[in-house]
Image 1 (tube, one colour):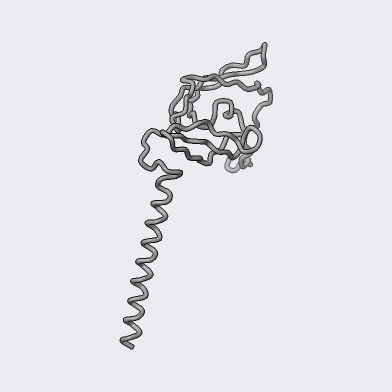
Image 2: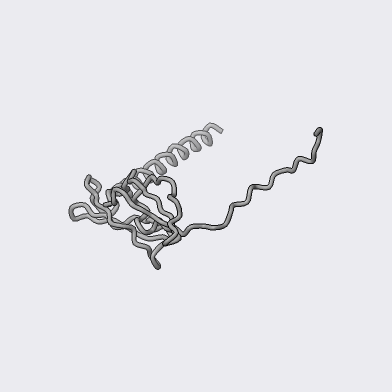
Length: 146
């Protein structure tokens, strides 16, 4: 019985050592990307969609002579005009312009991801809506106690 217990302990210690070493190798592999683990000034380009003008894509980063590619996503809505990497804070929508049947609002840059170049302010517009929003249907008060 004592021999079985000793063998079990040795196997468990060996398994722990093997998994620890495997984890170290994986971290070292991912650390550098395509080389350039010591590079501090990475510059990234815009996200380019794999198919069409929106959806999943790739952005390329460069630093000195090193390059690497990162997965990214181009939004498939009105935000694709200025990209997913420029984060803006928007004000309220303005009144409807009767001449163009659109309303607009302005956004101020809050954050630029991946050091991309973003416009400090942008203006977006959308068609005016003429339909009235319905009030949510709640439980009707059937005159209890009234």
